[in-house]
Structure formats: structure tokens, C-alpha cells
Length: 115
Length: 116
Image 1 (cartoon, rainbow over the protein chains, first blue to last red):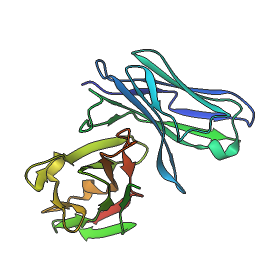
Image 2 (image 1 turned 120 degrees about the vertical axis):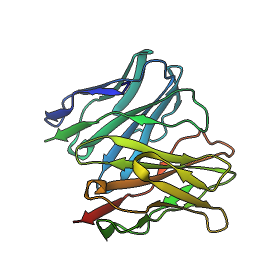
Image 3 (image 1 turned 90 degrees about the vertical axis):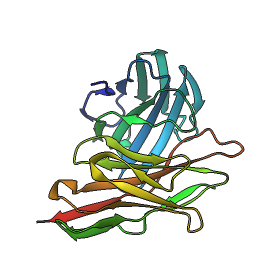
Image 4 (image 1 turned 180 degrees about the vertical axis):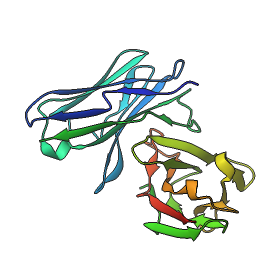
């Protein structure tokens, strides 16, 4: 049963610390998405990759957030330095082809708490 | 600008009764519409999508959705609700237009509560 995996599932850190979240997309999928979910803002797209190249990161605060795909099986989202307002659940999703009709398959999320 | 509206924060229904979770959208060009469900402390699970063709789309767990172009709606339905259907439901749209990278725009979500 192929699925998107994310690590860690939970992370508690102090303000100013670096946080790295990892995602393994479904094998063979060539698009990866990072979303953030908060009570106030709902689900927001942070970044979108196709064939490991960033296509859209307009939703991401550039001064502290960065997203990369070092290889086809790993996507990372980094926050440095972290702030309490970054507390949220971060979801990774992958899609099979980058087509406009693709279904995105979501991982279980990383719940981040910044104290 | 593309947008999705889920006008009800919560829908309550008795087990065995039909349920409807409402969604309206605004996009330029043809809409591609999706429904996802989220159980507590879990990721989003895909239920169904409308791309083209028949306006009634059937999906997982007995859910279906009706696409109505004139009303720009894509309501989620199920003929007979189960207590286990209680969850948070998200409608999403992906539209085709200039400058559109094809990203999904999600509604705010509707909590479905099915009572025994």
C-alpha cells in the first residue's frame, strides 16, 4: 500500500531553533507539495515541486523557510529561525504526473509546536 | 482569483439519514474539483474528483458529488450516513488559467457530525 511518509510526526522546539521536516513521496510520483494547516488560515500551499524543480513557492515566507528536493525520494522543508507563529501541522503531498487532473496524496503530517 | 467556499462550518445528521456537505467555487476556465476527508490527527484522504463528463461522480466509502456548472457548486452527498463518517471534509478546486500552476485551492472545511 503506497503512501506518503513524513518525519517527524511531532516536533516541539524553542523559538529561534532550526526545524527540518522530511517527506518521502510515493515512489514514481514526480510532483511534491508542502501545505500548512492552521485553525485560522486553513490549508495553505507553501511550495510545489515537479521533477524536483520548484514551480511555485509564493506561499512560503522566504526569509525563514526553504524547501528542497535533494533527490526524487526526499523532500525537505526547513524553518530557520523558527517562531511561535510557525506552530501548525505541515503536510506533504505527492502526485503521479503533474497533470492538471492529478490527485494529490497526503502524508500524515508533522505537528510543529514552537515555544 | 480562484476560490472555494464551504458555507457550513458544521453539519449534523442522524445515522442512516442522507447527508449533504456544500461547496461552491469560483475559477477561470474549466474547474477541476476534489473532495478530501480528514480524520483527527490524520492526513487528508482523497474521496473523489470531477474532471469532465458525467455530473454525478462516485467516490470512496459510498460518497458521491454532483457538479452543477450553472450554480458553480460541487456538493458532497451520501444516501445513508454512518457514525464513522464523522470527520472534517474539504472541497478543493484547481482551475486552468494564465499564470496558474495548477495548485489546489482548499475551502475552510466542514465538520460532519453523525449521531447514532
